[in-house]
Image (tube, rainbow, N blue to C red; front, side, top):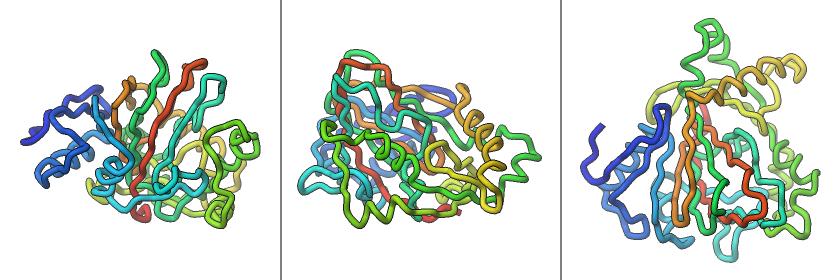
Amino acid sequence: MSYSTIKVNKIAGACGAEIEGVDLSKGLSNAQFDDIHRAFLDNGVIFFRDQNLDYDSQKAFVRRFGPLIEDPFVVGPPGHPEVMVLIKEPAETKNFANMWHTDSTFLERPPLGSSLYAIEVPPYGGDTMFSNQYMAFETLSPGLRAMLDGMKAVHSARGYNDEVDAGSYNANRPMKLRFDDVMAKAAKSLVEHPVVRTHPDTGRKALYVHTPYTDHFVGWTEAESKPLLEYLYAHASRPEFTCRFRWTKGAFVMWDNRCVQHYPINDYHGFRRVMNRVTAQGDRPS
């Protein structure tokens, strides 16, 4: 695949590409953004090194993909409710969302894509892994694909609720909860999404279930759903579907939540890690 304004270097066979030749803090031409957007669709997740982004420039870039989402649980910095500042302090051992997942599928219109910008990184550890859910679906048996395609699953905010109940957002943690009507509504949300969604831009089908927010299949009990869901969760993260990114200060990453899962690895106890997250809203999965 050739691009006219950027250089794109794939980092793994399944997904992920590092992009060179662009400064995201400056206004992008339409040609540059078109190339970046195509690389995003082609690779599922794109990486940029040595960027210099503030809240406004990160928001401006992500907004070109779609309207921005305010996280319904976590408070943003003053004047920037669309930004989530992800902080893990040296004394903390628990990592935020330390599992394979897709962001906020408990929303009726889940994220199109999420972005992270590295403010402070540990000297080692803290990598993020990504998994291609096109491949996860396409490598299932024809019989299982036929059964899943057309099924729906119920998604809820139980992953967030479990974190809250476990005291993960205690008074000492820098990430604070909203405790407003938006959070109360999200905490009780139950939405149905297809188990296999069709990407609105590529037309490809991707597996769309994951550990923290998928409760059960529509028309099935949780007990009946559990064995098949656990099989699909394990299948979705097979090593040959994945790539792994080592963070450096100033690195910026954006991934496609419609066809990619991610996993922030919690292996950097004793060090501080700070990331700014901005998320673009997607369509209703179909």
